[in-house]
Amino acid sequence: MKPRGPSDAGFTLLEAVIAMVIFGIIASSTAVVLVRAVGGSSDNRARAAAANIAASSMDQLRQGAASAKGYTDLVSRQLDPVTVQGRTYSVTASVSVVTKAGTGSPCAAGRVSDDVYKKVGVAVSWPAAGPVKPVRSDTIIQNPGAASDPTTGALGVVVTGPAGPASGVPVTLGSGQTQLTDDSGCAYFTGLAAATYTATASAPGYVDQNGATTASQASGVSAGNVALLNLTYASASTPRISFVVTRPDGSSDPSVVWLGTPAYTLKNDATDRSSTTTTSSVAPVLYPYASGYDVWLGGCASETPSPRVNFVTRPGSSPQVNVPVGGLRVTNTGTTSTQVVLQHADTSCPTTYTGTLPAGVSVSVALPFGQWSATTGAGSAASPSTVTLTPDAPTSAVTFS
Image (cartoon, rainbow, N blue to C red):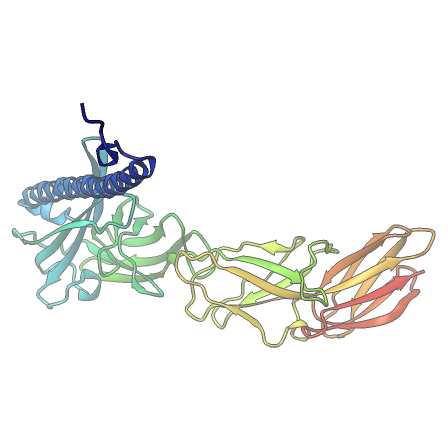
């Protein structure tokens, strides 16, 4: 038999490796396509289920509003959640009234009734790995003849934030009724006996202009009339404000200590949220003013850095804000402990910080900017006796002996 030549030999090792690499590339590409197809299929199933839930919920709302009472009770609210194939869907109904006056919000109509129809929207949302727009269903429901009761009144509560009307916010009257605000920010209560009612907006993560977690206001309601209230309420901004001492080399000094309870200023033209701190950072809960806030360590104008630290607050934001402060190195070279007294030189800003410094110890003290005198509790001056801390020269040192 003729022996097999080189052309009849099997695959070499190199050829086998190349074949495996090509196979791996093809397999990886196929896997990516399959994963995307499965994910897209899951999203499509969720959206189809949400569309069915929206249609079913809208049918129920339409049937319930067929009577005069059902139509009157048709208001913005959170509907019961629906679970399909292990996935839970949130359902929200948004209802706004169109009146003979032609307005789309009952809070702007100034009438007890005179509804022509109600615009009804159902939004269905569900948890997903990425951002998903809710599925919506919208319709109008004609007034079946719900008459106004001239012996009762109505109260319209408008909730607004820096971005405009706040929809989906629960508003509760002191008498117990609760409604969600509609797309125009309006919660409209009818059939109220003549009395004084307190309306309170309350939603997780929201605050009023003073940082309170609820917004409330009272108004009297009279028979045959509509009273209107306006509440300012928005998703809070929760900044983390850090007071930082910067060394001459530009690095921050994490070893600073705080004597007493230094004041810090936190304000804008509309509100003042200043307070005190015993640590290097604070985390206030703030109403998100478009103008933001000015912040610095200290409570007096002479302690204000130039320029001031201003930061922007947006609804739901959590910015990191670093505020430069002064750092004074205080050393006790004596053989006994001494009481340290640091006094601000500005007589209009009588800021004083005191503390006890053991013998042979040196610490860095965080201070507002300005001129400071350093003495013992008995009145003996340090060396030097006065120092000035500025944003351009934020650190200095004194010695007690």
